[in-house]
Image (cartoon, rainbow, N blue to C red; front, top):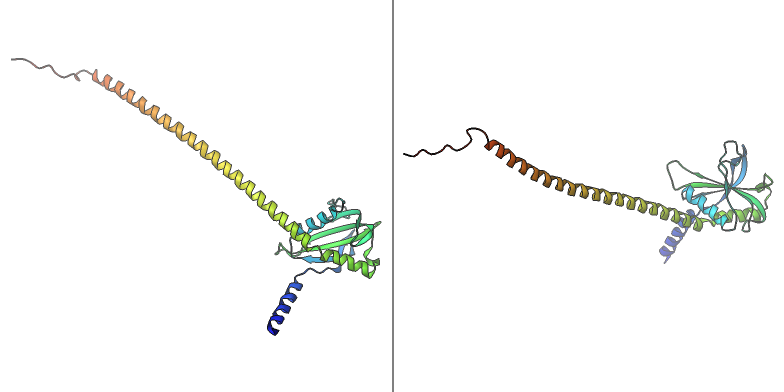
Length: 221
C-alpha cells in the first residue's frame, strides 16, 4: 500500500508540473517595458490566441488586431471597454499578445496580458486578490485552449479532405479524358486500317495493268 501511495503521489506531482501557472512579468508595449500577466502553455500560439479571443467574444466583445508599423498596439489583440467578471467587474482594456516560445517547438507559446484603462497600465495598482483572480483566469484557460486546438485540427483535416477530394476529381477527369482519347484512337485506327485495305486493293489493281504482268496465252499443236 505504501508503494501504491508513493506512486500515486509521484503521478499527481508529475501531473501538477505540466499544469500552466501564470506569473507576473513584463512585455514591451508603447516602446517601453510594461508589467503584465504572463503564462506559458504547451500549445501552439494559434490555439492559445484563438482560445483567449473566443472566450472573450463569447462575453459579447469584439477583438481588434493592430498591425500598423507605427501603431503602439502592434502585435496585440485588443478588447476595449471589456468586462471580464472573473478578473474585474469594471470595464478595462485587455490587450493580449501570444508568441512562440521556441523556434524549435511549435507547441510551446507564451501569452502576455495587459490590463489597461485610459492608456494606463492597471496591473501595478491591482490588489492582491485582483492579481490572484487574473492569474487564475489564465490558469483556467486550458480547457478552452484544448477545445481551440481540436477545432484547428478539425479544420486542418477538413482542408486535407477537400484537397484529397479535389485531387480525386482531377484524377477522375484525367481518366475520363484518357478514355475518350483511347476510344478516339481506336476509331482512328479502325478507319486507317480500312483506308489501307482500300489503298492496297487500288494499288494491286494498278500493278495488274503493267505490261507483261498478264499471264501468257497457251499455244495449241
